Length: 401
Image 1: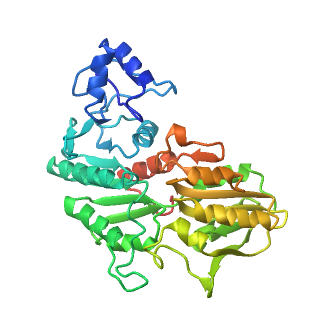
Image 2: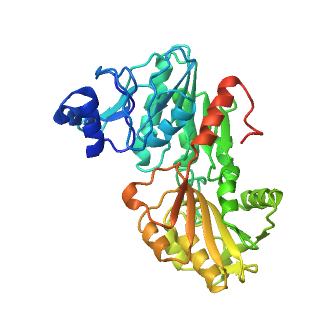
Image 3: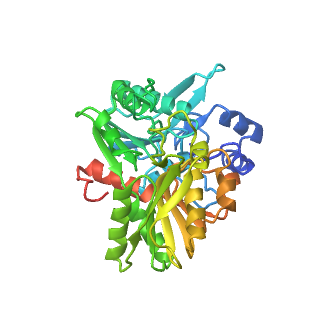
């Protein structure tokens, strides 16, 4: 039996390690990888020996505990994060293969019994959002037919969360995708949904009362790193979520760091204008920011600044704010975001900007080739692992999160 593969399945080092451990040729290993392995644990479908594979990182993947009352599965959205969570819970990811037909149809196969067990699926619906969402839906429906006791969908990133209004600024009908995703999850039979820093809290209201929804907050997981930065007279600048930034200010104060709040806004030819995806649904973020002037209210002269937002997509908002703050005399400028989507030329913009560092969580996988020195990635795995542990024991996670 061989252990769970994670991350990029086509790296030569992984192929060589598997070939060595299983005694198979590298060509056979490559063919097995080509099937589309998403989560194959000890006792895998191909019966490839009885050893554990130790990755170059030194992580050893444990065998599936068949006596456990719960199972953890992962789609292709973020298998590295899912493996990290499983290791923290001292278990092994359940065995599953996610493959595609020639026309792109997704096929799910599970190789572990889930009858009467509590199942947790870790799957962000980030890029590619359609594939990852369909994988999640098919996994839930398959596990429901397999008589799982409960099914909890853990979405580190809730895709389609920015489509929250059925009408555009100009009165045109638009998709309410955030609600439609909730309807789909309910239809396939999910029991609980756990997400991390939803784009808007109103998304929780799109789910029926029989589905428990928990939205995990990343303020406290980010706090230790922020304290190590040695912030000097910090100013916190929210982009989109003032309440969350106030919580960060209070958390810093409890650790002996007093911070002030500052505010970024945008003005056009007609003065102040609310610039976001709800008011301008047909314009991309970069065009919005470039067509408006960035303004700031507050004092940042010779002070450290922390810009806080829930996600960085094109990077236009964060970069424009950072450049403005630097022009106003900020000593250092940091950005903290839960989800680093980094689409388009976001990384290039960040690299050339006034930002000293961008802190993101690994809710969305960032490939090695796209990592730059200004990006610091923190792990959300401890928070998710603790949440699963408390849910399985029947403990409340409200105070914990």
